[in-house]
Length: 253
Image (cartoon, rainbow, N blue to C red; front, side, top):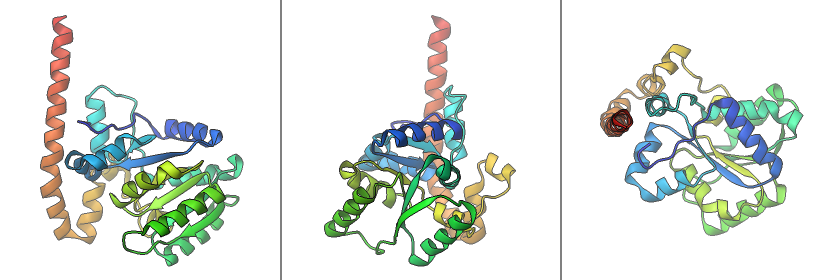
């Protein structure tokens, strides 16, 4: 989208790609992009670079799916961080996946441990780490990287929120030896049942953000959409214009 690359996948294809990568024990990092991340990528070249150099940048957000389909990518479907995490946890026993959780509070992480033990028996949790709520020091990053490389988890789930988790992954990835880092935002809270997806029709209409923000933080919701709708709308219009121009050239030829 614009200068931001979004992977053309659905859930099954994403699982297959990640499964092949995990089997090879080759490191990677995965971004899960929504409208917020896409708009930020337009303003922040460094953040855009991190998104574009990822192994996958998944389309979490129906507006991204609509844009891709408008541009001719008919096979793309929404892949959310919470859904991806739960699917991989469900596959863990049969495939031997192991997990490292980084982010949120100690209380949330312990609730995650209990939920996984209840719902995903056989999924191996190697470590859960709640970092301080401030920028990490170099020494702290060194310790975390050393621990990940020593434990060699299949997946490292990073729940710091956007854009902190993407910047963290971009910073540590060059030193990761075998694990797949996945930034999943609020997925930790979905896993413990604190957050839930709204009804399917709300999701398909691209209104999940309004549902959550409007329900819990209406003033912030109005401010967020006043800022992001025009920015994303301009990207959509420019993409639509390029699509029409391309079709016109093909028709002329």
